[in-house]
Length: 354
Image (cartoon, rainbow, N blue to C red; front, side):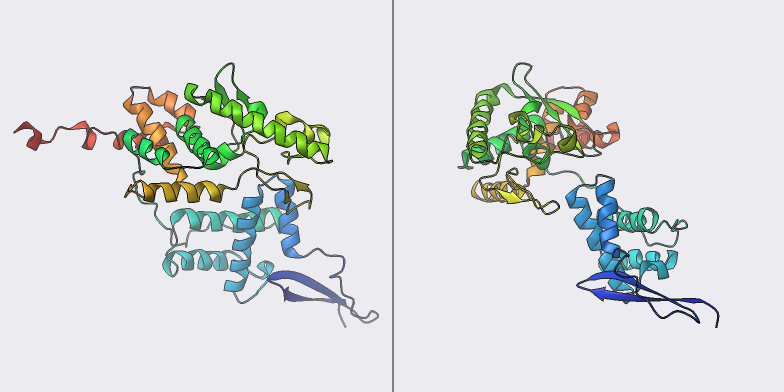
């Protein structure tokens, strides 16, 4: 009898793995599942090797599992271009997902095939694409920003909200801010690993100098207390924890807005002090907008939109605003010129001339 490979796909707890069996005249079936890592373990290992964030890892793993379940628990090596196109099309047609969601699912599957399975997929030209509609951002007036801040009664959350509005930082950029990246003398903040893994510099508002100094002093007291009981470590990006072994305990690397409780790292299992949970900020701003009777849909990102719009209203050059926001293309920043408080395209209505 000629040699043949018999592959069985097994599914356990939502995760696939291969059981490879080689059969011949003189050998008995032997399982190689003990030596071959499971597919999702391979995916996670590859994501971590390429320094993808935990959020991206979670999102990609979720899309890969959905893709496998969508096609009746078949292994991705048994599928290809047609199955990927069918899955992405179903997301658009049946689930009516947004363009960003479909794009994320596509990125996850391309990563699976190219980086993990070492398979180059042909060009996916039969996918029903979700078109990204032209949407204007929600922007608060300066009076509405003041109303919002007036009803946030938590001092810490108020400072975070003011810092997002005063600097244009995204919520996670603000919460991930390290002590070493705040320069009080130069009144500037270095935003590390922003969107697109880019660094940028933004201003530190004069009105927040003293509140932020007080917050850093609080973080120092908390850090000293952690060190006194044998703790005080913070998560460090990439391989810096290996390159600078003492860095994880140094105060400069600590978060400006540390969490109240210690938490366990889902990857390494290490117990550290992380930063404030973004959900606390989201809930606080949403609740404040309701109390202040702001009928616009307000989120932390609304403060970033308002920052950009108010700078343009103040006469600042759009290129300057682009750099402060960290946009790669000025066309992204141009959207704020459409929401300035001068009406449509700055045109005076004929009604106002009567």
